Length: 224
Length: 323
Image (cartoon, rainbow over all chains, first blue to last red; front, side):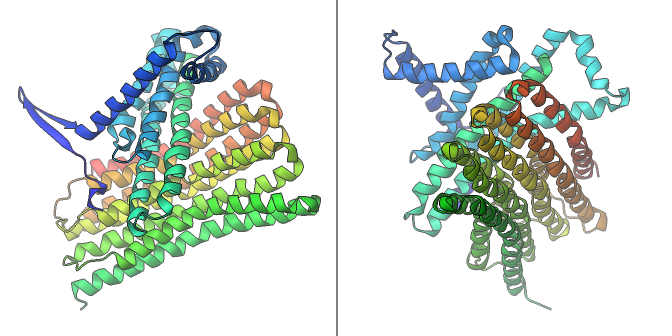
């Protein structure tokens, strides 16, 4: 029960800067990235009319997320943003599912992963907003309805990053805590696999989708 | 004068009572609503009693999970104690009970609403019972998120070591950490339920819009949870800030005030955003060609509704950081 909030860390002093690395999170993120890269290579390998199993799965992802992006952004912009949206979902899905395997942990259980992805989405959304509308129009939107509402609008935008990343973190963290505690209470009999199915696979899929959809929606709000 | 050990044990019992006492309110209301609608559904189509009963029980089981979280916390509070030697350890127990109990209210009510809608839905459109049931499962599972936030805070309060925290103002930060998430989760739980209920009704009414309705519903649910997340954020800040010993009244009231601001500030916007989402989802299901327009209007309406929660968050952060 003591490992509830334990995070393995490596600390370095380089040029007077104090650096902290969460080793478990980094290792698990690399595992997820490795799986995704291998999946990509296998899906591209001997690509053809009669697809191999990996190509089928990849085509399912591509089709579904291209349609989603096209609905939200229109056919012109969809080509540019679709790779981001699709890979974000695949990455988050594997991250949330990773905890189902013994001895592996979800990288999304560490607040740093969702928060950095949230900031990534925020920066991309605002950069595309400035590029699509020009800086003048972009800045003027913050002064709606009156100019002194600007600080509140800015805080409202930052609150979006907080809410998108803490939603993912809270759900995955909560799921893994309840699995840990219930397994401890029932001596790992009967219940843990059912809980893993619900919190790991089901909630993990939904939360990955919600995160991706909200990133897409925030981009489309800025672009249009 | 009570000795420290019995004081801490007593407060653990009080926390257990608060956890399951408050936690029992919401789930029971939600399950009752589901059972009521099941009766209504059966009066239309008595031959479907097997299907309706099965779906009602599945929905009620999910609605009950918030109360089960509260039960787990209550059991841990009663049996989990060691030999506490510091008077400060009385407060995490009460805070933990409040966080779990209060946050289970909203999620319990909320998860019951789609469970009721699914009973009526499968009677209306038996051919698409699977789609209706899937929508209900997704909606009710997302409704649990506010209760899960409360549970995370409750576990952190239970298992982090607070014995070195100064009693003043440590008691206020611990109690405040419980209150902020607990109260803030009430509104979003109910609001999520409203949105999910309309999602289920919409899919049952027009199964062809399954994808559009579900997508709009998930975006609406996600944004309706924002205020619970602000409460969660304030709780985490209260838990992990450094606390200097200070017996002045101001030092204790600032964290409590921040907790009340983030907590109560989240109730109204949570329900209001849920109502916006519910209407948007209802009309996406009836007029899928207007999905893009409806989604944009929904998002703008939600942003305006959320502004009062952001005022509350600003006051909470001012109290935490500046005062």
